Image (cartoon, rainbow, N blue to C red; front, side, top):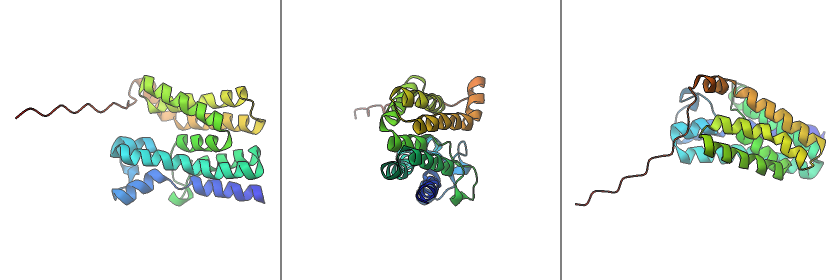
Length: 204
């Protein structure tokens, strides 16, 4: 009963697609009609800028972290892993959007691992930042970071539920990036570009 409760809470938490709701509340628009049409933080950032993008990243991470951290502390790594999987599923197929296509689970997966296995989550985040800094491709950073999770879980000696969940999460994130992979192969994937520095005002 306890396990089922945590799984349900994880799914409902994951189903709160913050990218969609932030844009709906503050811009009165449907982010699914903008940019790539995705409700995830990357599309929000591209279309609406850093403020809403950062807010979406933080909240999508938190909705994975909070239920998984509580489940892990109360019931152990196995239940924590199931709760994280449920949160990721909720983000991908959110009940509050009538099970329509959600996001690609990257931030929610990151939050789940920070709650379940903080060192794995931290290493995954470091990989994401390093790859993104080198390539400026959010999709590449997300896939490489996700693929590294089972390696970190194994190297750091976490129990088997964490290693299995890490492997499953990696596969899920990569599968959801199929369209990105095709665009990368065609040379059509969009990079994030640093904003140009403002030019100093001319002297009067």
